Length: 329
Image 1: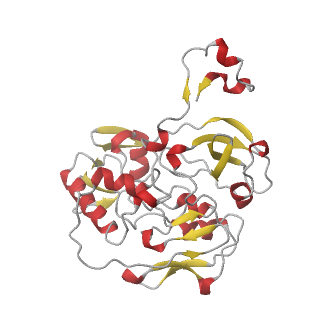
Image 2: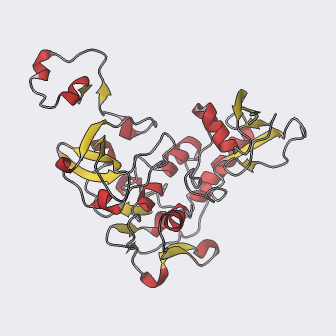
């Protein structure tokens, strides 16, 4: 298949036909990658809702070099041969993202100090990079009571930005979805059908795909801050999923179990509720080693770092498992 050439922020990249501008930018990497609050690679139909990934197309293609008259969503706009795209090099794009942050924060409470998502929140990162210090919104924010939508998941609708990721997980991973978006406009909310509980085997993945703190793990809520924990890769034999997870530990205690996310905060493998909620003992897992946190975040600070030289012999005597000899804690 012949590749097409796309220019993003002055960088030429060759991709397959049918590739979106977003995924083309991810091949370039760095600051040229637009932010994404609703798009999720492994979820079909995601994208086009939050408008955070808007970019400017200054040249449509080699066949039709006219620029696109408006900013377009990079997550659902296909790249064309000869297309020229501006992301961080366009002042119009950056100014528009400032406005998008302001819209997203109209109803979103600024309770980061007490939110379990703090430190790994996509909206927190987005607001830090593109937000403003104040808002022009003077009306009362919408508020909802927190509800349990299952024995393991708590829904805090005040924080929801209606990205629809959780409903898509339920649609595409389970046989029966019992929750969705109710009502319309500013009254829209995520809820279950007549307060029915979500009990399917893969419902916990809704927590991992949520970009804010709207869906939280009831086992982990208020137990610890994520930047105080040490993430390690681990796996176990599981008949329902791959069993590949990240254990978030402090000392010898496992505080939570999540799927493994890539540098864009997306899961490549979904894990079952059995692995996520029912195995908090280290002897139940085969620990592979420290998790490499690639994203710039507080969770990447003060974690394990690879040694460039062997540890002193006195430390070898203190380590029972030789697998950890190439790391410092």
